Image (cartoon, rainbow, N blue to C red):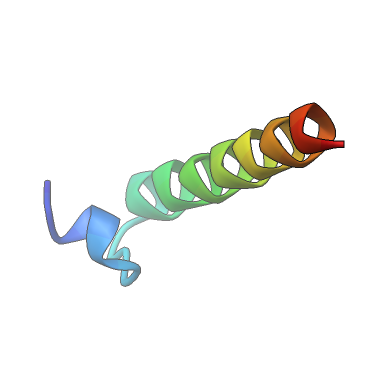
Length: 37
């Protein structure tokens, strides 16, 4: 499963998981930015 999180998903499921992780990261960053302001 570590290969999927390595930023190089080889399957459709891997791509979806990677996209979800990216979206989660963006949301987390937005929350941190808002809380700092």
